[in-house]
Length: 131
Image (cartoon, rainbow, N blue to C red; front, side, top):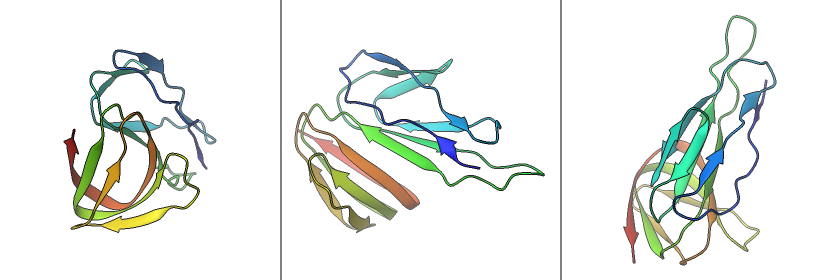
């Protein structure tokens, strides 16, 4: 099975975005949201400036193996530095084609009014510094 999770375009603070995330098995998908947003009743609402990351998982059942998690990230209104305290991820900044690998103890900068994609390869703990 695979998770079907379309990319999300950059949004303005206060915007509400309905999310339709499914699995090819038809089993329910669980979404985890980090950043300045809330998620309820299938709708993501941006509550402040910064980056929002959403990870979709599906754990499988007696007939289907777990799906590979899918992560989507978007919307950075203010410049920020993402400081990784632990874990590993791959990041692609807006306008770049290459992914870069980061691990705990490293950081990366995101320009204001831009976006980035992130793929978590090992659970990540991080701190965002805005401004």
